[in-house]
Length: 263
Image 1 (cartoon, helix red, strand yellow):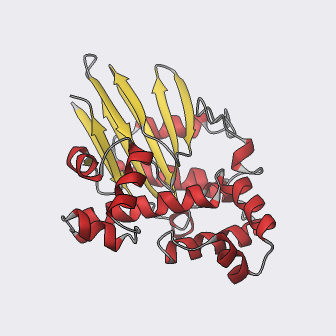
Image 2 (cartoon, one colour; image 1 turned 30 degrees about the vertical axis):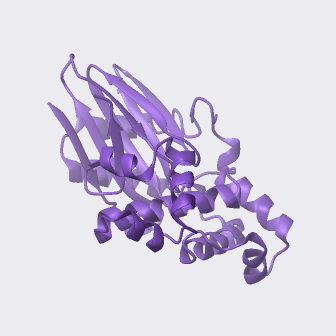
Image 3 (tube, helix red, strand yellow; image 1 turned 180 degrees about the horizontal axis):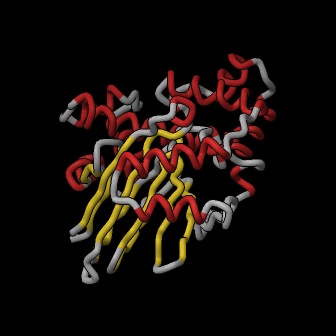
């Protein structure tokens, strides 16, 4: 039987930086699924239990559809970090700590393996959440160097991804080159890439949370220039038109996880 559950952190400290956890499990040796996920401004830390081994991955996906295949017995922990959330728990910029081709991420290995094994050993969702809260509380290390990027991210979200870089630098009061350098260093992408993803995810929110069904309404709410711009940006990020995309995705759990399953 397959089980997929999402839960928000209980810790007030951790909830500022981690949006939610999810747990994906199957005890069926014949289990198989192929799904795709799409660009997001949230980063994902994923742990797979494979026999007695743990495999840790980190995903920053700003620009493409990524396919995943799962087979057999599956035990998986997912951690969705808010923008700049991971940066409060690491000693180096995230861009220096993982491989963008393989998503390999071993910054905390192997020191966290015993704590993660405890999470895998319990089936109680609340206990899993509390153990993960504790794991990250121990590794919290506030980073004062993030102020420029944090302000930039706030402005990008407030403008639904429409603000120009020059205006952004001016509002924050920093040099354009300084802003671009800090953004790339701590978020692993350019401001233009980030703006596209914020607008893309705003449109998904409009369709899912607000309940807009008409594609024209969704594009207007998300502040796309026109219908052509709306369609082109979706093709760029998903390889699909908006209509095809919205009809094919499936929401997983109670948070903003949307996967497309291959039939």
